[in-house]
Amino acid sequence: MAAQKEHWLFYDGTCRFCIGMVERWRRPLEQRGFGFAALQEDWVRNQLDLPEPELLQEMRVLSSSGRVRGAADALVFIWGRIWWCWPLWLIAQVPGVHWLLDQAYRWIAARRNCMSGTCSIHAHSNTWPGGWTLVGWLPLATLVTVTACLRDDFAESWLFMWVLGFAMFAGCKWLTLWKAWTRGAVIGLRGSLGYLFLWPGMKVRPFTDEAKRAARPSGAEWLAALLKTGFACAILWGVTPQAAGNPLLAGWCGMVGLVLLLHFGSFHLLALAWQSVGVRAEPIMNAPTRAKSLSEFWSERWNLAFNDLAHSFLFSPAYRRIGVTGAVLLVFLVSGLVHDAIISLPANACYGLPTAYFLLQGVGVLFERSSVGRRMGLGRGAVGWLYMAVCILSPLPMLFHEPFVTGVIHPFLQVIGAL
Image 1 (cartoon, rainbow, N blue to C red):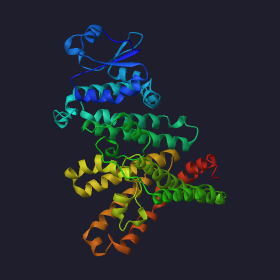
Image 2: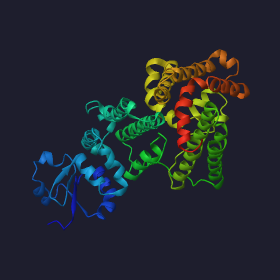
Image 3: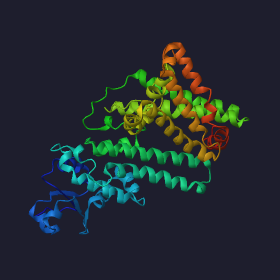
Image 4: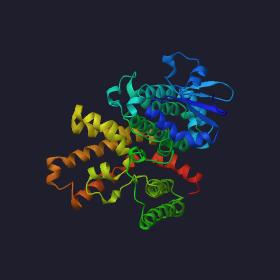
């Protein structure tokens, strides 16, 4: 006879993956009145009264009201009772998300024994209709499409820019996490939440259970990150107001401050915070001014979050089919289209200029790697650095065109008190 509990979680007692997940959840759920029992126990069989083939298809939660929930319904019920899972509970209320959760749950449940190491998950990666691809890409496509369709409902263009950017970011975070799950990565609940909500990078591995622990950062590293953050704040709220009479100049000053504050300052501090608790999270900016070539700048120094994403989902699948040259141009084309969406769509002007900017960068990288570029020394030393600087900076007004700077960034700077 079962002991008296407010709620019960029933799981497959022969599945090592399931048992491991239960152990991860046991403490927070026991504190909230949950009991645990294997689906194979006689009293559970009698309570559920299900046919044997159906009994072990999914975990189930028996609530205090007597209602039995399974699959995604059970997960959402659990998330609603743990405060640090409320972001997941809220996301699950978005139309369409529950269906995705249910499909994802059933995909994993059908392969739970593979995830415990008793078989190869790769052999089953495409047996679910659409494989991991549909569940991985659909949230990104849905979030971006819905946000773009609601463009006219935003009172301010800068607000639309941030919401669209966040929609792309959230969709990409889910895509990378889902791919890691389908490839057998073991990521606990807190690691998954930390990666999704508290880290801007796109590399999941540091948050997996098997990742090596990071060394604690030194005081010098903390000081460097704090100095960069302080310098960014000085530009944003100190220098930018001095250019208030010139919207274009003020907008450019404010953009520099914002980039330094986010990408170089606060994201570096966040990386150090993760390293302090053992997670090997690396800053997404890797001293880009030290790059000695255009190729090094874009592939190893600037915005490693996008680089990780582009290499995994664009370059690696493409270069075997269309060659390295085609794959390089594809990556820069997609980067340009993404920036066109974030920059030109909110400004409603100069469509195509950001894409042209990044295609120029791609052509510049290919020329640098050509036999002529190598003879000219474009990939090394002072000549390489100068070539990189000219290629990046001279066409920069194509990327951040005037309608965006004055019509989107300038109003945002006024809102945050930088003007």
